[in-house]
Image (tube, rainbow, N blue to C red; front, side):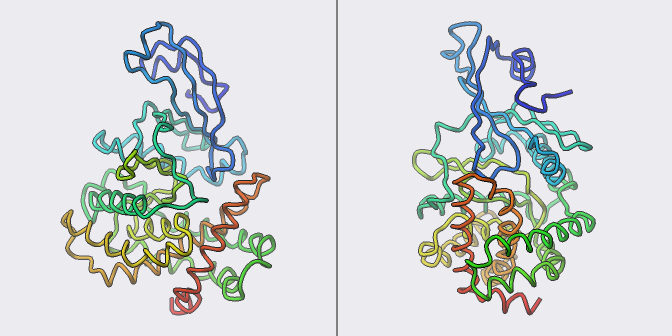
Length: 354
């Protein structure tokens, strides 16, 4: 058994999984309105021995659980399994890009999960509403390209076979997208252009074909939710730690870049930096030994990858539009950013060719 909610956390369990002599703790909910599919709490730790903090024991930790909403937990169960497996299976050498993790477990049947990790709040937290600076966007692009290169068409991925999207999961996703498309149009249709509305209507019938292409070679391990709300930057904006790996999967790495540009850059900056950052992604892959993926192929796959953050917008809008002011602001902002991308890249026409 493992803790399934904040009320299940105890001093005894904390000592068991961390080795720290915790006397007592308080907690704060830090997930509200951030677009997380689960519940995230900061644990404020008090130690039995006064010198524990000076001995570099952490004063705070972060614990993440599945949503306490049964329907949400059922919906995201496969992704909770993904995230806990990533934290359990990636080598310690990836700490830094991923947070240091003390415990990671998921019940495959119920979707209940618990992840205990370092608190990154001393770093600079990304903000999808504000969007990234150019320096931050370069750091994110560099770091994810390096990560992608580590698992590029390689046997290293054999231990991550559970990341593959089965046809069964994709068909389930397709039904969810179709259902949420109607809700999305009902809630936001009056804000959308004619092309945007038509794209929402047509996309569910094209989704399987798009994902077949996205999972084709060359593939790697993608984060799948690569947006600023999941980023923590160092003081120099050159280092980045990425959280929330629920949507990680095996597909074309450019999907993470498409997600970054859609959810992480305002319209003006995306227009100005898009080409530069795509070139930088390509150059970073080359520097890490990836020679068989041309920049023209990257730009072609980028257009295909843009349909994934579009799909996430449709599905996430119902979860984020839950009375949270920030959640509603985020959806409204991403709709504007997505509208700009639809226009600039003529996505409706692109979709008709698939």
